[in-house]
Image (tube, rainbow, N blue to C red; front, side, top):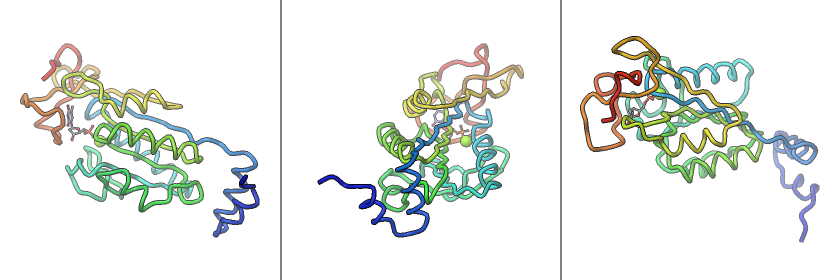
Length: 211
Ligand code: TMP
Ligand code: MG
């Protein structure tokens, strides 16, 4: 059986859904993906918050999501190192988002993802691809590399898929030059170790070593 445009429109319940189906069948545009990546203290979350603020000013609906692994401040806000914050939802499995939020253009203009390096690569890619295909924009921020200089898979894949990306730099704590790396103050075996100043510092290539 072939489902026609009229059948689909018949399923729409709200005014927003009806309008969206109208737009989709006439001229559906794919959402755009923008990615901010770099070392710690470069201002990735700050840039994400700037975008959130702009969208807020335009009265666009936004969903801000972070992995619950990032428990540095609290579960329901994203927070920058200089304490700017915005409400968000935390999750551990993507299914929690898919089950509880209907991420469609009539509900959300943009989904913002922070700390993508902690998110499962396959699940992130499939959800992001679906949201983009449905016409929802996505903005993602995350560490490009771990403290050993190994690229984080999820950030790398999102950078590859991005329509627009920015690698941002921090300031080296030793010499004040541009920092592209994150230095781990005390060596530890685990790749993932949530923390901030005292545990990690931004460093330039000269003053960084993999740990
Ligand atoms: P930030 O980029 O928002 O400052 O936060 C990065 C988080 O990632 C922070 O909790 C520390 C953590 N992290 C790791 O788990 N492993 C690493 O190798 C590095 C560099 C950071
Ligand atoms: Mg951050």
